[in-house]
Amino acid sequence: PRRYLIVGAGAVGQPLCAHLVLGGASVAFLVKEKYAAESKGNALTLEWLSMLPWGKSLRTTFTQFDVYTSALELKDQAFDAVILTVASTALRQGEWLKELADIVLKPSPTTALVFTTSAMSDLALLESLEIPQNQLVQGGISFISWQAPLPDEKFEAVRSAGKSKMLATVGYVLPSFLLSGPAEHTKPLAEVMNRGKMPCSILKDVEAEQAFAEAMLMPLLVGLENCDWSFSTMRNSGLLGTTTGAMRECLQVAQAEAGPNKLWKFLSFFVVRSWNLYLLSLAAPWVMPFDIQAYLKYHFCKVGDQTKQYIDDFRRAGEHSEGLNAMPNLAALVGKNWRWKMAKAA
Image (tube, rainbow, N blue to C red; front, side, top):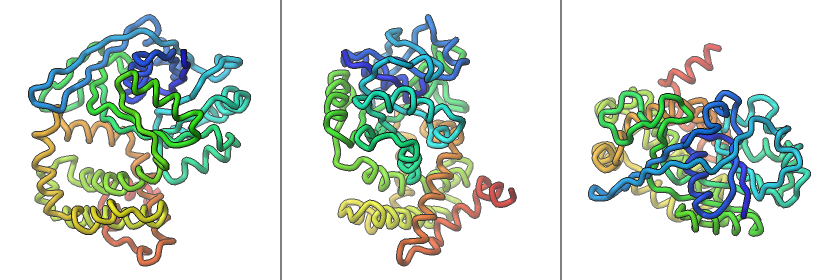
């Protein structure tokens, strides 16, 4: 069977593992020592929620995985791919990624590195580690997942299975994945994922596609954080116009960086408007089968440094894009946000 190493066993890594195993693969996790002790000998629990009001959730447990805590333990072991599921900022913490590259990836030219972050600076980081280009695969996480229960959630969408972070039930919706890169790596991985009921599409350039999605999402997150993660507060704050304006500015940067895209250009001019965001903020809590506001607050506070990094990347790229030097709406959003205030004070 195909063999994969997943770096990180959190809300993203666990669903990936479960669907890869379902697709017939052998899977191992690389995690910190404190999480390894929790996971060895214990079952992980997942709950796949339906987006349909009449749909049923699918709750499963699985134990078919190995656990490692360092790259040294992986010496002379063969993997078809190493899949990174940690935040962009974690890639820069310590020497673990360099060790992984030197011990697992470089000695094995047939092993792919699938990176699922898409900050504009992440590819440069991986290239600086001298990982061959033909081993790099861009992955795109298209599903929403979280460890239950969510703090301050208004209703329990997923019943927790354990008290520890590692053993908490992972709830998720819309399992799907994107890949781009050399066909000898993307095709086999996509086949395993599709067999495992996680629809996987191979695109020409996942990074470009994600750049447009993040251009819309990241300013929205900053605007929501400025309103204490409340859609209601945001609707009444006067920030809807500033937020959608910042989204359009970031979409222009994405166009400049990734190349023209007719769909996103249409969205930028006709769809990304304050009245649409108003309607979306009203509909989202009713449509999603979990507490979307609690999810956004929990997840994006946890990876807030990554959101800041992405926004800063957009701002730096905007400085070199004609007509976007100031990006006034985005500047207004970050000017009200405590993360940038603290960074400026420091």
